Amino acid sequence: MKSLGLSVAILTPHMYIPSIQPPRLNIGDTVAIVAPAGPIENRQALQSGIATLEKMGFRVYFKDRILQSFRYLAGDDDGRAEELMQAFENPEVRAIVAL
Picture 1 (cartoon, helix red, strand yellow):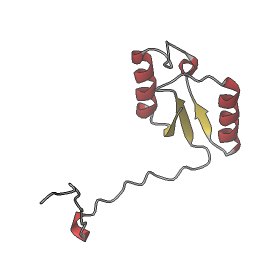
Picture 2 (cartoon, one colour):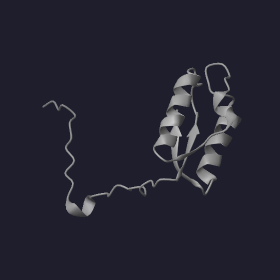
Picture 3 (cartoon, one colour):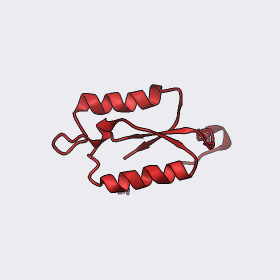
């Protein structure tokens, strides 16, 4: 007898894993913009996005490093990692947007 190799997972109430809901953003909260992967090729689109966030009442935080380029990446590995970790460690940052 051959098997299709399919299995079915049945979740009972005691197996349910609740999702983690982040706190809601409020006007005046700081949103960090980081580029942990590819470079930002359209600076005008970046400025438009920043302007939109500011019109929504958010403060926008980013370092000029997001505009760097190294080969096909947004800067070297150490710089991209440092940028992302600084955003996570900054107690004023309430949300992170990764481009």
